[in-house]
Image (cartoon, rainbow, N blue to C red; front, side, top):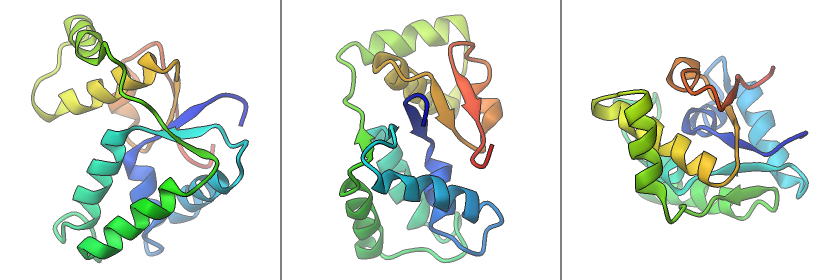
Length: 147
């Protein structure tokens, strides 16, 4: 990896579902976190959202049990090449400022909070399949797994 990059929640979810056409690219990216030099990271919010998605049968074809989801999270946390970003102390003021410049409403706020977490940790690159959610932030380099 040439620069630190955040893995969006959808990358983690697709990496866990071999039946999905995006699985291979996501699995390879997540698997790269076994290498301590990978420079890949996630935010605590990604883990909570991952848990929410993989345990919800309305969101995934094969919902995981609580223990399976927690086991997957623990496996991610054990990877030497995956950094869990700290929550910036100024997170609220960061996302408030971002919303003032790019107003959003409803659930879209959670992507802004993720952007504020990234920028508070000097991360400007994100791997995601939700490009439209992050491309409005000119500070970010938005990539799709496999690019």
